[in-house]
Image (cartoon, helix red, strand yellow):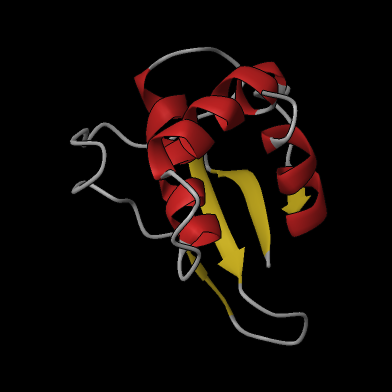
Length: 104
């Protein structure tokens, strides 16, 4: 799995590719986990970054019952998403995500 963060005409978008040769889709936002409809972002600590973190955490925790989505999302915000350059595109593969979750 990899997450692709990019800007398209000034709008932040997050894409997901679930397997190496698979299709690339929009990363689904998880309003059931974090009820915020203002979009996603990275590069600061705020609601848009938290929204992105929950969307990524939900994908990472899918099918792994011992992982807590809220704790994973918090780790992603604190250790990775808030420090990314908000003006650049980023590709986050599963290893990078796992590494930053493990810093908590």
